Structure formats: structure tokens, C-alpha cells
Image 1 (cartoon, chains in turn cyan, yellow):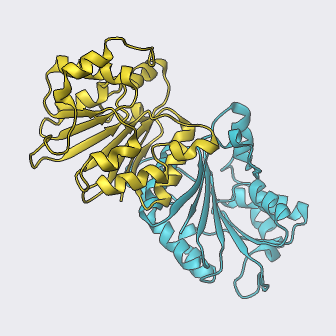
Image 2 (cartoon, chains in turn green, purple):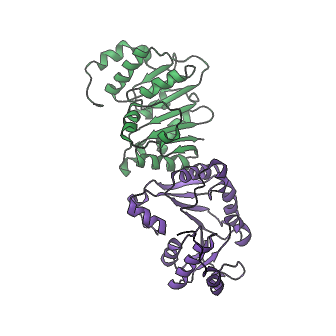
Image 3 (cartoon, helix red, strand yellow):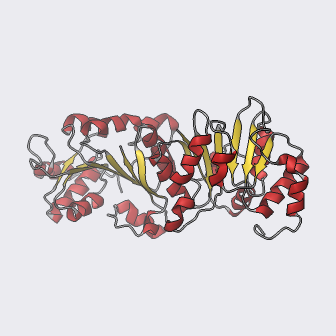
Length: 202
Length: 202
């Protein structure tokens, strides 16, 4: 289960602290950096790291047990272009250098369906202003979700914030697009659930 | 059937020429004017005329048989705040005064699914530039469609043209929103087909 406590998590994270992101010492190169906010169990970011070996990747996940599972997978795959942060997304502005990120991926984010929680959605203006600070040059957000409410609210929020919707699909699987699957997505596709997808640029 | 020739259409249209729109003589008042491009059999525009009795309505439909059916319904309902044009949408720029329209409705427009026909879609930049001329003040486009491809391409086109997506639903029926039904929509809703809806403003 997603949230179930993993007693081994703390020690495992400590033992692999070299995978944690630190702005002073990580990615001291001139490569682009992609950020995934909410990596879940890590399937997407691992595939992206393998697909783009010359792109740095920062993965953020707040849930410690899920974070530890993702870390374990990453340790096993031996990829070197990824670092992780176990922090709330609102803190990224202090932890990631300004003007450093070229693309942000939001995969199957928490939909926060209640109106009074709208600001907690990762595409609310609260987070778009966090991203504004860490983005470098063109701002590109790529979102995937099976949640219609989150998707609708993201389109309105991004559009009102000055983003242009450059690409969109209400059924990503039908496009035949090359696509790194998250663990959710693989499950949803088997069930025939349609995945919403967009690319927004500012 | 939608396209079947109606032998009575020509004479009926001639007999009710007072319902045809002429920029010199129609709507010489200070009311707002809504435009529906592609009125089909007219159900939506008739409901809108009844719901907004103090708004002028211009309805456009190219297909003569369908146009005649809509006209017949309008004649029978005795509404006075509607005038019709049986012309291609590209000609609106010559037939409707510039700066005169406050809202444009695009209901179940032809999806033109082939990429090489993309410019024919009523939300392509070709038509958005026509609308630019006839819009007055804030430009508001309201779209409904069951066609996913048309909806996706409309979002990208509107967004790239400077419109902000102010409201969107991938399942209009689920919103409980007050909504004038087109004849298509009533049929689709019975079949459980989801209707996409958006409001874009520039």
C-alpha cells in the first residue's frame, strides 16, 4: 500500500544519502535539469533518466515510505543523473537554485478535490509562483493525470497564470506518443482509464 | 436526416425573409448581441433567446435544409430577438458590423478531424481572426462539443491566440450547470456521451 509505514525507510535513506539533492554539490555541470514533483514510487523519473542520460533530474516526494521505495529502485538501477528531495513542494524555492530548471513534470498529483483545498493543488497559483522562481528561461510544465477535476482546474489555473497550452490530450494512450509510464499509469491503462495530458509553456 | 434536401426550404426562407440578418436594419438597439456559428436545427439559440430576452442573437448556418428547419422552429416560437444568416463563417467579417458581438457560441461544430483540414475548424486561427473583428470589448467564446479531437485542438488554438481558458468541463452534465441544450446534446446525454465545454476570454 502507498502509505504503509516502511520500518526500513529511515535507515535506508541514511545509507544512501548520496542520492539526496544539495544545491551546493549536486549537478555541477552545464546540463539541463528536469524536476518531477511527486515522484511516487519513481517509475517515471527512472525511465526519464534512462531516456535522457544527459539531463539532470531532481525528484521530489514528501511521503517517506514512498520516497524510500523510489530510492531503492533508483539504487538498484544504478542511474547517476538523479537526485532526490523528501520535502513539501512549497519549500523547493529555498532548496533549488533560482533559474535552474527547464521542465517540471507533475504526474498523477494529489487532486485535492475540495474547493477549499484548491490552493494545495500543484498547479494552483501558489505553486506556479514557486515554479516561476526556479524555472530557467522558457517555463515548461508537463502534466499527466487521470483526475478530471484536477485536469480542468489545472487548465484554468495555468491559462490564467500566463501559460499557453501547447499540447493536450484527453486520452494519452490513443496518441501513440512516446511516453514514460508512471506506476499509476501502467495500472490505469490496463483498466482502460483515460489519462489526461498537457504541456504548458510560459 | 441532417443533410437531406428539403424541397420546401427555398420558398420557406423567402417567405420569412424578415428573419434574415441585415446590418443596416437589424437590432438597431443598444442591447448586447450573441452570435452562434453553426446553429444546426436551432434548439440552442431558441432557448438562449428565451433565456436572454434582452440580448440580440445572430444565428449562422450554412446548410440550407438545416437552416430552414431552424427557421421554421423560430417562426413557430414567435421569438423576436433573433436574426439568421445562411453564409459560411468566413464571411461574417463582411456581414456583421465590427465591434458588435459580445459572445460567440460554437456548439458541436464540424470537427474536421484530418490534420490538413485543421484550418477549417471554427476555433482555428483563421476564424479567431474573423471573430477578432466582430467582437466588441472583451472577447468571449463558449464551446461545447462531444468531439475530443476538436476540443483538444480548440484549447491549443485558443490558448496560442491569446485567449485565457476561464472555465472548462470534460463532462458538462456532471457540473449541474444551467445549460441550453442543442438537439445533439440532448441525444448525447441520453446515450451517456460526455460533453466537453469551455469558456475562453481575451
